[in-house]
Image (cartoon, rainbow, N blue to C red; front, top):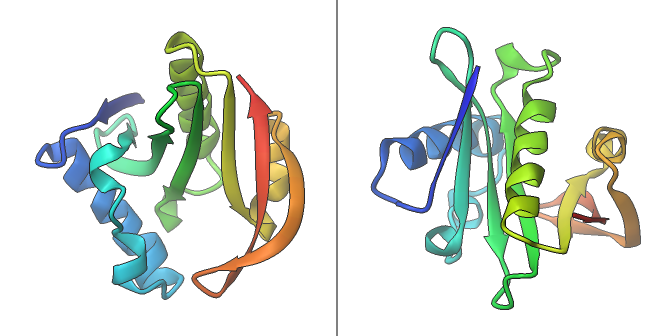
Length: 145
């Protein structure tokens, strides 16, 4: 397993991230492409996890705020055949270590309700009320880095 990240929207890593996101969010969850690919793409750090066969299987992106102290983790996705193998956990752990090394202080994410227990295992705590994003129920969660 290896994890790569990029800020370059022309890189192969970014294209691999988009491919995973398209399969999971657009095809599987029916999120409109216009919502999935947004105006924040160029400001994000895109992470991709590759399995031992060098297949890109999971992704996420980090959107830092302007202060450089807070960030939003978004678009966490694992291709269906690779779920339940710990890839998303490993990817999130790597992203959190990256944020800590970059001296971020707080990280938030918007979890689909069914994913809340997963994020709680990583130390995230829910806050606020449920809300809809792309017609899917979500809950905001946060964690001190």
